[in-house]
Length: 406
Image (cartoon, rainbow, N blue to C red; front, side, top):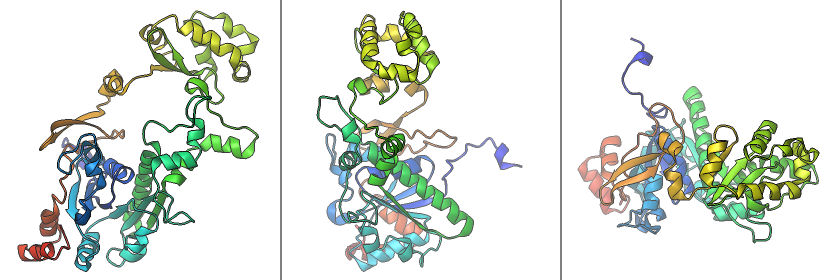
């Protein structure tokens, strides 16, 4: 019988893939969380001498080295505590490498080589092992040995110069967009290398940096800046750099976002706000004309949109003009589309009780099935040593007594 015709539930596409993760805080755990949500087994290696992942202690909600911040990035993972300062601990790690498909880290760029986490070091234990590094500045270059975090990358890559009101100071995005984009980039690179390894039996290094990711996402801004005299500026009401109208507008009771990225959207928009004469006005007859005359057009539109509520305008625009409310987080989580897509999942936690978390955006059969809580520190140490590495109780006790594992 063809397995494809089976009625049994399918597993996620990464089922059977085992990834060792030497990572902490946000960007790295976010990368591997998405791999877990696609079916991979992720074994989180934590340092017992420092209390494990620093994310366990991030407020506002912390509970015995198990914060909600930590839970948001580590659902469905396993935790083993290994001290890399111990030769026996390193030996345990190498045995895990023999039985795994990839080693992921989000350490400082100079540390993977120093700690023996590169393909050059690990290939003798497993020629097919994929090693992926996600760092602030990458493994090469003059800043490779420096720590790097999301706000620093937003500053250095020019994002802050574009964010905020024109008369205000530079600002960062409200969420850690570079951390999470870097996580996606690293996950993509790791999966691409795994695909090759499954084909030819050889692993490789994958080197991803937060700064590289930030710069790569400048895309058309980069093209315009590098090849013309155009310069990006902070724009009022989160408006697009060149498309008009494409921005937030205040209504009688809130704010809405409008994006007229095509001429027919602009025409429908003008009709629906009862200003059809704007369509035939030569000053607004094209993308270029509206941009050149934006200081005239935007006040006209802004005054009109103030005359009705969010709901009234959005009901008119829905399905015709790209638009949406400027929601608070609580309003976003109540949005009918977000609910319909199943983006909020319920997880049972042994001490917090039922908690809600945000799922992976990748929807495919068998994905988003990791409903178990993030692990306590070293929760799976004994299980992995016993069941995966076939160690007996005497050997496990010796490793614990020697401090090789927590």
